[in-house]
Length: 417
Image (cartoon, rainbow, N blue to C red; front, top):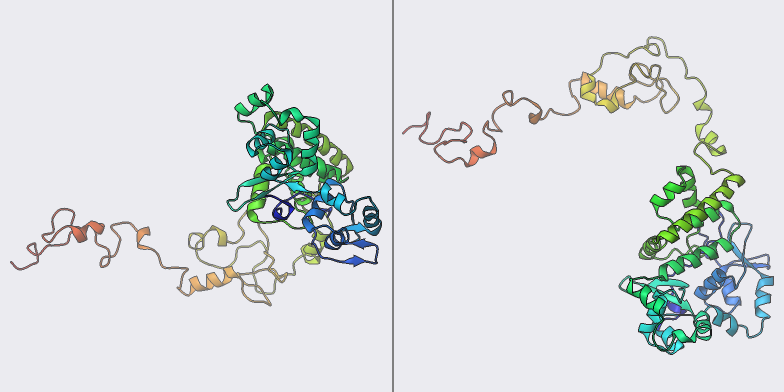
């Protein structure tokens, strides 16, 4: 029997940090007027999962505090506590059921309940993964009771023709209905234009998203600001993978609707402010520092002038292209880590660089590494270890038959009879 206790890995998708960073669930009371998530749940006599679902459904209003974390005002707590039937009425509003308990609530079989859900008559509010990592959908108990009152003909007798044809075609509208509900709820919980565009962009796969949003910086900004978890509780890796698999639309009509919605939200976001790009902001000036714009100090006496080739060194073929100094396309001195201009392969006033050490090794005859035998022509290979005939010579036979690589057998030349 599925209850709210089982929704430990369910992601309702609520994140109240406007920067897209999951907010921690630390219990704190600030100045006696706002409460954290866990403290607010205790004040409302709700479990933590029930409180998260209440916020997701809009039953409990929260706001972003001065530190960017979600906070519930004392006035909101008092308003909910003053309602009739508290706390049973609030608990009933967020009570969820699975297939077995939902079928028992409606008085039908679990098979018929599953057919109603796949046909789109029921909209899941969340999901969780069972021990086999299979997606298990859960529904609001109040919505099931509303369906029984609104359409009692769906619970008895034969299924309508439109439902039979839809199910015979293999339709399963549970993921689509869940996506629509999630996106609509998240859009109702934020006013930031870029966050709204990021929420709608979750309904498209990467290929469809790249066709609508051709700017890679805007797509990267979506990833940074989009809400992902409930109060920072991201759940398991398998749950996040299931979320990524279920979020993109898979029906042509739904894909078209998501593309149109994203274009509308993106136009509003671009009018509000452009997406940040690399090189913007005061942090780049701090990283560059004054050494980036200051000219390098003059080379000491006796050193090579800037722009002239350094002293003799190994050939470029020995060092490799990644270790060769600046060529004709990049003349001038190379500034080291301490801001000194390199001259002659060394840094004056500091330790020698990598190129200078490699040149010193080559000048002393050490080289970078020994040459491999495979790099030489076959005729120039030294004898001793490798036979001319290759590996086959060791198994050619005692008499030095064909393919023995020139090794004389026991009865061949050079051996006594």
